Structures are given as C-alpha cells and as structure tokens.
Amino acid sequence: MLIIGGGPGGSAMAMFLVRQGIKPVILEQEEFPRYHIGESLTGEAGQVLRRLGFEDEMVKREHPVKHGVKVFGTSGQNSWYIPVSARDKEWNLSFSTTWQVRRSDFDTMMLKEAEARGATVMRGAATKPLLADDGAVRGVSVRWPDGKSEDIETQMVLDCSGQATFLGNQRVTGPKYLGNYDKQVAFFSQVTGAVRGSGTSGEDAKDNTLIFYAKKFHWAWFIPLDKDIVSVGMVTPNADFLAKKQTPEEFFRNEFYNINPELRNRVPEMNLVEKVHVIPNYSYQVRGFCGKGFICIGDAHRFIDPIFSFGVSVTTREAEFAAPLVREYLEGSRRNGGNPFADHQLFCEKAIDNLEDMIDMFWEQPFAFATFVYHRYPDQLTDAFASRIYPTEHQPSPAIIAFRKLLKRTREYDQDDYSVPIGSRFHPERAALWEPNSPVGTTEQWMGAR
Amino acid sequence: MMEIPPKLKEYIDNNRDSLPPLTDPDEPLQIDSLRVVRLVAFLENDLGYRIEDEELIAENFATLRSLGELLATKTPTASTGEVKPTPEEGIPTFVVRRKGT
Image 1: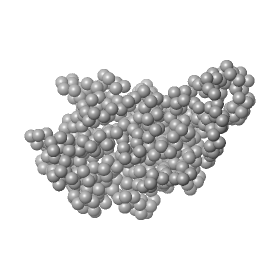
Image 2 (image 1 turned 120 degrees about the vertical axis):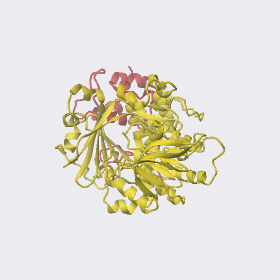
Image 3 (image 1 turned 45 degrees about the vertical axis):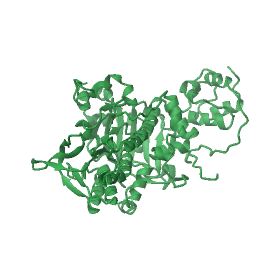
Image 4 (image 1 turned 135 degrees about the horizontal axis):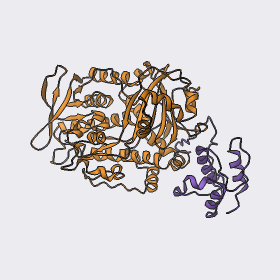
C-alpha cells in the first residue's frame, strides 16, 4: 500500500489504514518541516483530529483555538459571525471549537505520528505510475534523493499529492478540468503585533479567523498561528498585480490595507516575519479520480477556492471514508470489473458539489448568501461551514437546494467520469483541454500559456 | 410607490449610523450591506412580509422607492411571534436550535 504525499491527507490516510490493519508506505519528496499554506481547520476537521486521538496533543502544543469565523463587511463597521458547530449522533447542533495550525508544525506532527503508529515514511518523488494490462495501477516509479530511480510494486496507490495532482497529471484518471476560478492570486505572510479578539469564547474569541470582504474576488484573511504570530493574506485578481509592476512584497505591503478599513485596526504595523508567498489560485476537478488500484484524496482531485478553509478538512475526511474501502479491496471484494470505488467517488463528488454551489453563491450573490447564512438557513449553513457536506449528513440541505435554484443550476449524477463539470461550464473553451488530441498537454501548460 | 410603514422607516433611519432621517424616496439608504441582511430579517420576522429568494438583490434595497415597490406586491401576514435573538454587536447571530426547542 503506497500513499503519495505526507501532508495531512497522506498522514490521516495512513493512520486510518493502520486502524484497518494495513501498514502503508508514505512517499514524501520534501524534508519536513516545510512551509505550507492552509492554516485554518473547520469544525469537522477538528472532529477528525479528535477521532484520531490528537486532542490532548493539540492542546499541549497550544494551537490557537478557533471558535468561529468573523466576516467583516465592506465598510469594516459590521460583521457577521459563523460559529464552529458540531452535531451529535441524533443530529443535535451545538457550539464547538477547532484549531488554527502552523502547517509546518502540524504536518510534521501528523507525519511523525503516522510513522509511530505503523506507517513507513520514505523520502522520494513519484515520477510515473506503473500500469497493469487492464489499466489498474500496480505501482509507481520513484526517484530517491540520491538521484537513483526504482520501480515500486504495490496493491494500491493512494494519491495524496495535493495540488500536484500526480495521477491526474499522469492521466491515469479521467480528464482534469479547470473550474470557475482562475484569475485570482493569493499573497500571504505572517506578522507580529496583530490585534486579535478580546474575548475567550464566541464571536470575540482571541484566536478566531477573521475574513475581510472587499468586493468580488478581493478579500483578506487573518489567522492566528501561535501566541505571537498571525497569518495574513489577501486575494486579488491577477490583473491588478500585473498592472502595478511591483514585487510581490511591495504589492502586498501597498495593497493589503486597501482591502478593508478594519485591517488598519487589526494589523497596526506590517511586521513581516515570513517572506511574502504568492500562489496563483485556480480551481480544477479531476474526473474519474478513483479506479482499479487507486484513489485520489483531497486536493489531488479537486480544488475550488480557499475562502472557507476546507482543504485539510476535505482531505482528512476523504481519507477516513476511504480507509475501510481500501481494506475491502485488499481483501478481494470490490473486484467485479468496474470501478471498485465508484460509490466513494460519487459520494465525494456530491459533497464537493455542495461546497462548490456554496462558494459560487458567496461570490456571485453575496447579499442573498449573507441573508441565507444569517437569517434563512443558519443551522444548515453552520453545517456546511463545518464541512458537513456529505450525502450522509443531510446534504444537499434546503440551503444548498435554494442556492442551486438561485444559480439556475441542476446537478445530475450519471456516473459519467468524462462529462464536463459545472465549474468548467462557465468557461467552455477549457472543456476540450484534456480531450484526445488536445494541442495543450496539461492544465498547467494551459495556465502558463495564457 | 406604496406608503412605507412607519415602523420600517424608523428601523431604516435608526440603522444609518449618524446620518439624518431619510426624506427623499430616491436617496440611497446608505446602510451597510450586512445591515441590509438584518433589514430582511426585520421585514420577515417583525412586519410579516415574505421576501422571495430571487428578490434578495441589492437593487431592491437601494432606496425607499425601490423598497416600496418591492413591498407593494406583497401582503404582510400577521407576525408569527417567532422569537429570534436580537442581532446586536457582540452576540452570536446564529440560532443554534436544540432538540425540543
């Protein structure tokens, strides 16, 4: 059993597999700790960590406790608050908490613990999949740090490679389509001396996430990482950055405060303690991301938009869902010829579709979105914000169904791995990207060629 | 344009920060976008209007005239008396309902 990638998805996958009696190998090309963005966890990500037995360790390490997300409106004068919530077995709703994490520390903790629980961690990069005659994945070629290459045979490959989308780019999966969002860039760093909430719980809890909304595709975040340092970042259209002809740091320093008046109060001085990182943010969806001998987890098959901090949540939840299915597959079931994991694939796809409808609604119709969150469907949308988005979690909820009605969107599921997803329908010119004989090899080439 | 109910006019005037009461039906309401959301809740919970999802666009809530035109198509029902927490600063605005309540 081989897991590609030692981020939170790969580590969680390994730990859930160990619980199924399977001891996997994790292949990770980078030396940990390493920097990574994606520092806020949703309510259900907190619950996954609790189920994995990490609560005491998270408390001991003093990861900031997140009670909710406070969103500041354009003027900075008003805000709304989305509490972190939990559901019990009877689906009773209650307030809960989750954590903010410095990813270099958190990811290292997860990987070390996966190793302590029985996984084997190896430094190396997967370069190419090995396929059986029937197309099943039977291993990967690996390049070790000394430059030597080796073929590794395995019963299954679990692709937790994140946005590298290893199996997607190697075309083991179905096509990789671009989604709705591709013109934004995120600039981010870390600061000291930021002003947090003054309370200990609820809306003004000191370590909550703050989101500052400016206008469509312009926003900023504020995520406490420890008692001194806060992760700050902003998202703007790429065109704004290109037009200014500044370095990323100059642009970040100059534009950050223009996002929202409240930022001056929250970040009185721009004391950067980390370089300014830049990531072009584009959404994509890999079709057919499960098959004989492989499952792609989390960002390895789909990424939409970072606004609601779903990354770690989705990848760890998918790992938890996939683990028992992997055991069944290794035991010889799920081998009747078709996609052994078609049910899992549809289950995950439906969940992220719910999320996509929510995010599209946030950007396209912010007023209606806010009214739904605040007034129409507060309970159902706290569920969604907590990443309770799966079909077993009363989804799609009336809120998501109402979103679809306003977006004039229907979702049909015909088990077709190759139809163009909703996100790409906004940009039909991209749909052909992965079709046979496309002049463009990969999504990344296409992005670069523009 | 229909007559704006006095309670609604009062609510809007009270939510314009330090601006004076509105006198011109075409003057922008100038209430923060998040307060417009609270206005929708006020219309539905306190005044008994039902605003359709498709009507939740900023243009309908831009001026007293546009608001009056929106409400002119509607008949308010008696307030249901449903008690929701008053959305004030510092209080979580979400209703977290528990079983049996």
